Length: 77
Image (tube, rainbow, N blue to C red; front, side, top):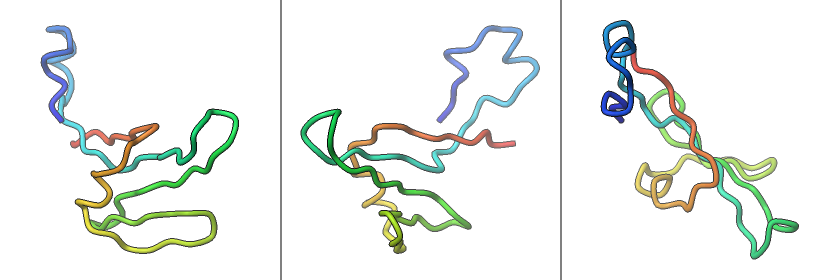
């Protein structure tokens, strides 16, 4: 993701503007007061799903098809 359109001219001169999605959190349930959270993270070039004590490697398409609650980005340097 390139953040350049959202940064000031000063920020563009001094910093990298590209970010890579490295993780997301998903809430499964019908309401805010109950449900379950899972996470997908990018580790060493592969995506993994974490669900309590279980984890497994998943395809990138599966990770990107989630209805994310939070997104985590890392600056590309």
